Amino acid sequence: MLETLTALSTWFHTLATVVFIGHFVLLALIYIPAMKDKPDIPVGTVLGAFSKQSRHWLYAALLVFIVTGIHLMLVDPNCLGVGNFDNLWCILMLIKHILIVGMIGAGFWFNAILRVGLMLSSNTGLPQAFNRFRFYANGMAVTGTLVLLLTAFSQVK
Image: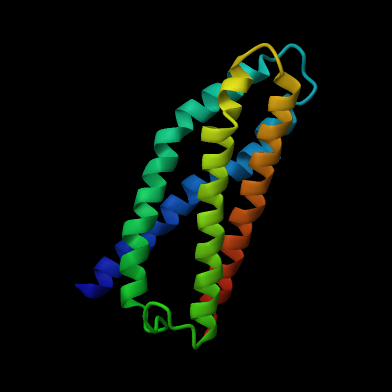
């Protein structure tokens, strides 16, 4: 039973990773470059729609990360307990979680404080908003791929 629950947690955790990190990688590598310098595309409207449509999926992915991540940490034999960083796995997980908290903080900063989504929807300041959104998406994509790299290295025995 424990193996089945662990397999399901791993699957859901991986699925949430695909949704969350994949969203930003696709934005950074495909969608934003495809819209850059295209006056015939309503960039602000399209990116605003992307953001609005993806919001619930991203929040759900974060919730799944928390629930499955706690379970996976509890059942992993490499986990030495909260605050104990006496092996490489624990150090990699600490760095990974710091990066994830940073990603959540960046999302809050760009979306709640700078209000980049609203700036994209308005007609004034669109180039600045587009550049801020591109910077945000690129940063999230790079940080997300670092999280994946740390996850891969933590799996090596």
